[in-house]
Length: 353
Image (cartoon, rainbow, N blue to C red; front, side):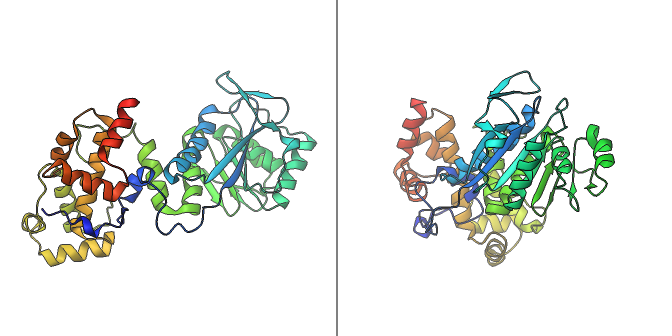
C-alpha cells in the first residue's frame, strides 16, 4: 500500500491523535493561544483516602503530560498543621492550612475524606468553604467529603454522592440534599465521588467538560495499562477508536488494519475482504473518522512504530519492517513528518533512559 505522506500536515488529524498527542513536537497548528491553567485545591482531612486523592491528582497530572502545556495546577491544604496523616498511615506535607487559602482565582476546591475522617468541621472551616462558594468556584468531595459541604449548607438543592458508610448520617443531617447511590455525581458546580475507584472517573468527567473527549482518551490510554496488554511490544495494535456504534463494515475494516500492520493491505484488498466497495470504505472513514482510510492506516502503523521505538531496543530497520515500511529511510521520512523528530532521536532517548 502506498504511503501518501504528502497528505500529512505534521500532525495526526484522525481520532488517533489522542494516542500520540503527548509525543507530537510543538503545539497543534490551531493552538493560537495557550490553554487556561486551572487552579485546584485539595483539602485533606485526617485519615483521608490516599487512593482517592492520588486517583484524582493522577488524572490532572496526566492531562498536563498529554497536553504538553499546563492545564491544571493543584495545591493541598489541611484543616490544621503542616502535615496530614492518610488512611495508610503516611504523613503528607501540605502547602498551607485551609484558613490561609486565597480563594480569589481558585477554580475548584475538593474535600478529600476517608473512612476514619472526622466530619465535624470547626467554624473557620465552614466560613472558608462558604467564601469559596461565594467566589463561584466549583466545590467537590472525595469519599465522605460531602459531609463538610453539607454542614456548610453548600449542597442544599443539589444532588451528590457519598461513601455508603456516611449516607445515613448525611441524610439525617441535611434532608435538603438529594443523595444518589452513584459512583460519582456532577450537578452544576458541585462534584462528588463516593469512593477511591470513582475519584479518577469523576476527574476525567471534569477534564472532558473542559477539554473534550480527545484529551480524556489520551489520558485513559496512559492510565489503562493495568486493563489491557495492547501496549506490550509483541501484542496486536489496539483498536484506538473502538465504538460499538460504528457500522459493522467499518469495524471489519478497522480490525483488518489492526491485524495487518507488518504487511499492510491495499484499500482494494481491504474492500475485497470486507465485501464492500472502495467507494463505500471512503465514505465510512470520512463520515465516522473524518479522515481517509489510507491516512488512518498510516497513522495506525506510525503509532505502532512509536511504541516499539520507546519500548524496545530493536534496530530502526527492524521496526520499520515490523510496521509495514519498505525501507528505513522511507519510514524515517514518514515518522518525522508526523512527529517532528526522527526515529533515531526517539530511540536514542529511550536508550539513555
